[in-house]
Length: 110
Image (cartoon, rainbow, N blue to C red):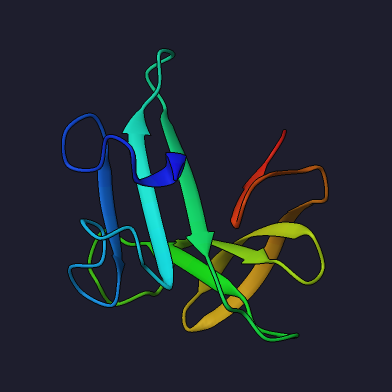
């Protein structure tokens, strides 16, 4: 599957359960790589989600998850949601509904 291609060589990857990246059998996987414009490209991949379940990623400078950016994919709704943790409460900042799918990988087009 394309999402696993380049893990640990041209992009960073981390998945669950631990070590699943090499087998290509992660329940959830986050991949990130530098983009040509000096920014970063990120992708979230998941499989086997029940209705109402979602996958999310938080970016924190201190590991405490307060005042941090969050990204969530809601596969059942076909949406990607960006939020900001105000303390421990998440505030939705943007919702994208133009979704690109490659198998079970979901990415927002914006």
